[in-house]
Image (cartoon, one colour):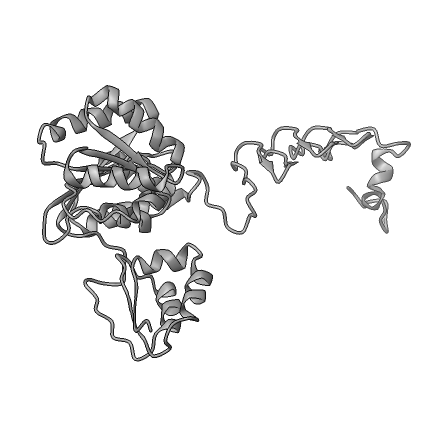
Length: 339
């Protein structure tokens, strides 16, 4: 009897592996139903997958296919050194915001443990009502927390991505990425919780340039497209990642995760040792010793002794003499033949 199917957060549902569940539900529905899909982002690969569920579709699109953030949202990125620095800067940023009782702050963390721990710490630091929702909290307590947050009884809600999917609060004034998301699609979904229905919104994100470095380059592009301020530290980090690659050192091209050596120092390459390129010093090559490339001194080559390449000094070479070695120079057709 179902004639109208709605898939909200459609790209997330498909991308996170809910396709089998979606197919199972659709098998019981009227094949002539109308289907609508809604999403803050619509990557092309997910779009192709979604089209398999729809026919004669019409697409209504605001903006482009590229990752973009609502222009009504002011984004602020704060680089941090560690967790203690992050907590200190968060409290510093939030105190003036919470002076206005009409503000509602949604805070995102990447783990359930962090959500509970952060809510506990912030209660003592801010002296404000704070609640948390995540997968380990019962459905009844989650619903109570959402009601308190929606009505303004609790101004701060700490949540994980999965738990926040059911949040439908239109007047969230501030979104905080206490833990920066692993990819920019999640970033856009998170900050999109504010600035809805034509209202202004604010997004505050803390980023560790070491731990979250892989997103720096694309984040800078996203901020530029939205005409947002870019911190100098973030800009420098993005330039390093762009030039050197995600590791911050030499780019890896098909190396299978092995390290490349510094051209002027011995380094490991897949567990094997290579000699230095300094041609004037003996180096180890595996367990064998090679002679120096300095061709004017005798060196060891394995356990055998070789004479110097200096052909103007007699050197030990078994029983052979220098003259024997160069006998061709002492043979001629006449006595006048010279060396």
